[in-house]
Length: 130
Image (cartoon, rainbow, N blue to C red; front, top):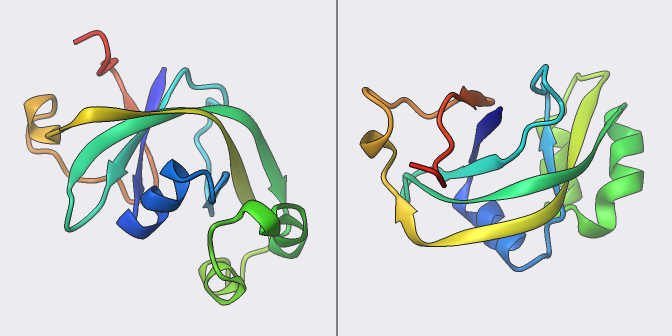
C-alpha cells in the first residue's frame, strides 16, 4: 500500500535539499508501513513530484516532537507550534530515501476527478509501475 501526502512547495524544496528530514502530521495513516509516500506538491505546482520511504514514525506530544526533531524539521518553531496548536499528539514521519521524478506526474493522468488530500490518501496504484 502506498499513500499520497500534500506538501507545500516550500517544504518539498527543503525535503529535496535534505534540510527537512521529518514530515509532520496531526493525523497519520492507519497502515504505518506503506511502501512509498508519494509527494503531491500543492499549489501552484499541483503535481506529484516524487516519493520517499519511511525510516520511522514518531508519535508524541508536539513539545516532545519539537525537541526530538527541531534540528532537521525544516520548519520554524513558530510555524510548527501554530500547526500543532491545541493538539495533545502529533506525528513526525522520518524520511528515509527520497526519489524526485525527472518529470513530475499530472495527477489527473492517474485519478479521475483528482482532489488533493487534506491529510493523506491511500493509493491503489503504484505510480512507478504504471
